[in-house]
Image 1: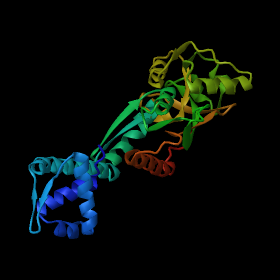
Image 2: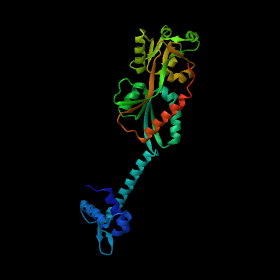
Image 3: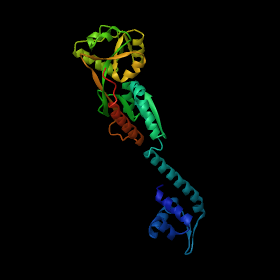
Image 4: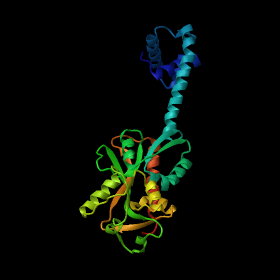
Length: 305
């Protein structure tokens, strides 16, 4: 059944006003155009909706039965349109965001606070997952935005860098290496090492960079979470190397982060989205806020390690 919203509007207007001529003026249509619209509607429904004489227009019994239906259809239509408008105007909506734990702990809370202040009606779900899981969730369409390290193979995704992160040595309080002015990888590797387990992208990056220097990491302990590494180092089980993004979190545990060289290992952290997929208004607003906040944060970076 092919009935247009314009036909419903035409029928409801005539039923309410009681005149084809006045309804045509109200709808900014010619009378013939309005008459054709009603004729087509009646043909589709299978009978007359109006009883017309030279002096009056009244609803047929079928027209009377259809009138409340038409009004409900128009009300539903308007509510649907308003719902879409609310999404565009950020007065309603939902956003799924995936981010690495170091980002959700250190930088994301302030961003969420500012976003909620600006758009309190948007419901946000944050998935606090490892870097590789962020990539999977964005790729599968489960999240519109991801905050993670640049994935090595992701032709179906768009990655927009926010900043370059450097790996730093993680040492417990009073460790012997804290006395050295300049730390190198050979210094770190002389102590028991705690590392992220494979196939973490950061672990792969470190292994490849060290292999080029003919160095090898042989962890005594491996885990999937940076916070677990921090607790193990704090317990005196060994030393580690972590992204500088986690510096605040680690220092809150009483640990020390120190720059490490020979080689200096870095990687980019940024926003991940699906290529050739339009972002919702909420996702676009969040992406813009993350980028703006990052620009401000660059001017407030902690002193060099």
